Image (cartoon, rainbow, N blue to C red; front, side, top):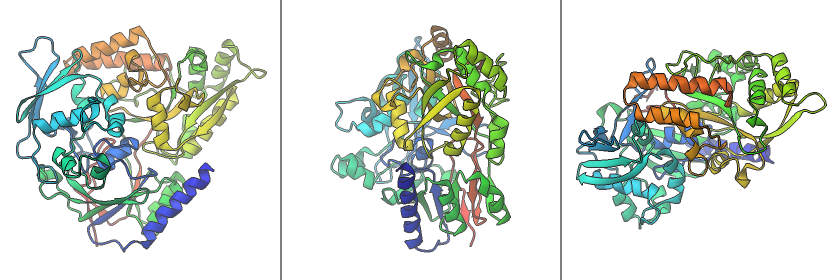
Amino acid sequence: MKKRWMGLLAAAALGALMAGPASAQGTLRIGMTASDIPLTTGQTDQGGEGMRFMGYTVYDGLVNWDLTSADKPSDIIPGLALEYGLDPADTTKTKWIFKLRPGVKFHDGSDFNADAVVWNLDKLLKNDSPQFDQRQSAQGKSRIPAVASYKVIDPMTVEITTKAPDATLPYQLAWIMMSSPAQWEKVGKSWEAFAKTPSGTGPWKLASFVPRERAELVPFAGYWDTTRVPKLDKLVLLPLPEPNARVAALRAGQVDWIEAPAPDAVDSLKSANFQIVTNAYPHNWTWHLSRVEGSPWNDIRVRKAANLAIDRDGMKELLGGLMIPAEGFFPPGHQWFGNPSFKLKYDPEAAKALLKEAGYGPDKPLVTKVLIAPSGSGQMQPLPMNEYIQQNLADVGIKVEFEVVEWNQLINIWRAGAKDASARGGTAMNYSYFIQDPFTGFIRHLQCNLAAPAGTNWGYYCDPEMDALFGEVRTTFDPVKQTEVLKKIHEKYVDEALFLMVTHDVNARAMSPKVKGFVQAKNWFQNFSSITMAP
């Protein structure tokens, strides 16, 4: 039933493409891995892909990501906040001052100011505010757990107070997009109506969209950052969750760009003069393990055995070279990698020995269920990859049954937690992770008080020693010293095999030779404003 539904969805999307007009000069059509158009109201769904195509296009945050370079690691930069930092008069190191960028307009022509910032934080955090939106709160609230309170200082200054000293606050705020209060009022104080005619401050405006079919974005001529004013006439987004359907659409000239091309099509696409663009970026592809009572993953011997059972080089061959084999939670060579003592390698005999120590063997295999999605943001090629892992684990004595759910549903289960009924007894889930900063890369996954539904510690892991390291990161404002703490955290992640660590993506995209000027940043998000289309 799932495969049939995905096939019908791909066919419907391709039908909409074929019925549409021929590509006009300056129009870029993108085939996404998502099965639907991301939520348009500000806080997008559909994971990192939603933010890529409907977040940092239509909206901005107080803090943005620098997406200008393909060579250097991407980092945060001032966005709608012209400058920000700790209040020098505050000895508690919990008060942050954000000086806002003057002259910024929303797409509807209204002014961006301090009142708009508070209004947007209320829409996520204040349940009794008129503009509170449960759908956006579900996407954004867990991104900013440090925030305790906030207030207007003057029309262009906002104070945000954290619950405790927290050096990761700017990274958290880079997830929070600013919607127009004036537009929300204009459409009758309805987020459903706002979704049809949204208004942000971003370089693109949403011109139209049809759920599960297409969205069309056009440039916002009044955008505040002249380096990000789009050169295209139009950006068209099309949900195509099935890899072969994306490749077929690209070959047929129905789209100009596809996310995550099927690996076995890469060589033929290259020979047909299509561009294959890749770059290392802060992403990992893991199984997030449940640590609730009764989970087999509570035994470190089982966790290490699973990590030793994976033939990562064989998977790289399966994926046509489009991956970096994992040596840890972060990629090899990363500044936070440290020197873990447990080495991730393919050693099935050592895996069998560890499982035997844990009480499993040929007559008593470990049997468990894992939640996976058939596609989705950053999920690479999840069905063949998970089938490969399933065989690797079976070879050493771990029998895995898969529960396949749609990507957005998997995200909801991730937020609900391993104890929730929606997890259907799964003891792990395949989830690709954005690891661009200390909070999203480490803290949110394993801090005790961020266990679901308070946060996204899906597996309910809790270790006072790890929590102490997380606390040290938050209170270490010197970047060099903070890096040393982050190395210790990564070493603990690896030495205790806290995840099934499989691979790092290279963010492969295939595109028409007509696509010019794209710079693939080392980031989950990308800048589409530099792109042009050749005749």
